[in-house]
Image 1: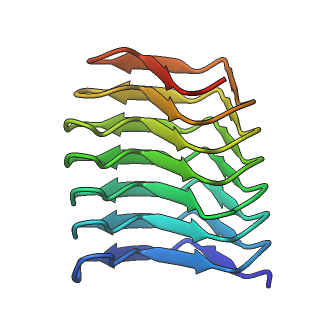
Image 2: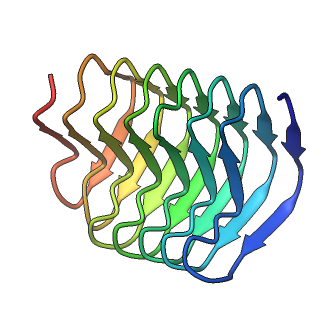
Length: 173
């Protein structure tokens, strides 16, 4: 399945769920060097669903819609790399990186800024064995890192600046 999506200007401004780059049931893709903007409700900059071993690197992502995550890694996505991205979100519940029900991903050296309430820098939900290393996160109105129901994850050498608690763990070990 190896595809390269590189050095594009991508703007998704359609209706609800208008993701800029959507990868579903696909593996070994490179998504790098893109400038990505979304402005719709629940529109993600990059959305991975049931996808493995993808490299999401050096993208500049801006989301302007509620629930518009910068990068979403969801539904049994495994072994994905998210690194060196610049992510800014401006609306409520629009986390920078959202990992849900996915395992063994590496999230490293990203710069994430969120500007609205309930918009966490990194939100981890029911994932295991994910590694978060060397990220710089400023969350102006929520948590820098929020985890619920997640086990065996590693947070190493990250910088969190947050309006609320910098790191929040709920039902996580």
